[in-house]
Amino acid sequence: VVKVDKNGRWVKTWGERGSGQGQFNILHTIAADVKGNVYVGDRTNQRVQVFNTDGTYLREWKVDVPPDFTTRAVNGPTPKAGDMSGVGAPNSLCITPGPRQVIFLGESTWPGRVFKVSLDGKVLGVIGKSGRNLKQFSGAHAIACPSENEIYVAETSNWRVQKLLLRPAAASQ
Image 1 (cartoon, rainbow, N blue to C red):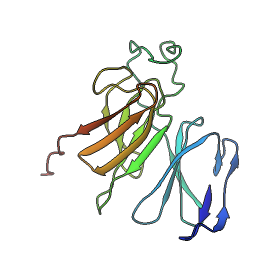
Image 2 (cartoon, rainbow, N blue to C red):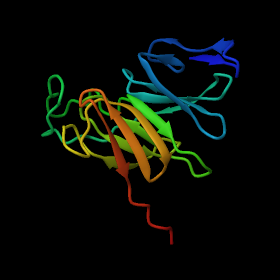
Image 3 (tube, rainbow, N blue to C red):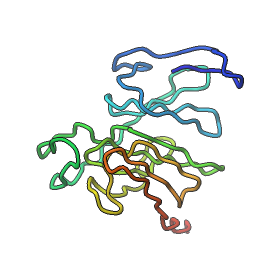
Image 4 (spheres, rainbow, N blue to C red):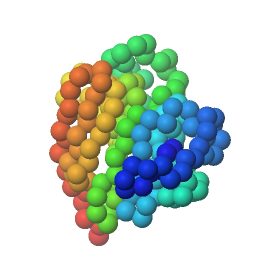
């Protein structure tokens, strides 16, 4: 990870290749929350690592929600039933603005889902599956989330951007 100042000048770097804390294997997406925590999508290690702005490791989490193994990959071979390779691999992520932030995380090509996740890594919702139809995804390579109820998902394998309007969560009692 490279940190630069507001003028684009190098400040510092952190991380190296590997699978330990503060190490990466295809650092693929990055975003910061309102407190300045930096969320780094480490795709091949299938995790998100969280750092402070100085690069100090804080925590990590994984999305390990089993997919529907009858879903076919749009691109490449479909993994065998029970194979969790690629599940939750963060291809893209965004953090909503405002005081009540959540993360939207897009998986790689298969199983091709988008997750709504709390800042501490708890999965709050699963959207879609691998495919070419509306609300299906393949290679969610970029996500924009101007609010918790509106997201844009850019897909490399389907060559499109989908706009999703999500129903607001029910008010807590």
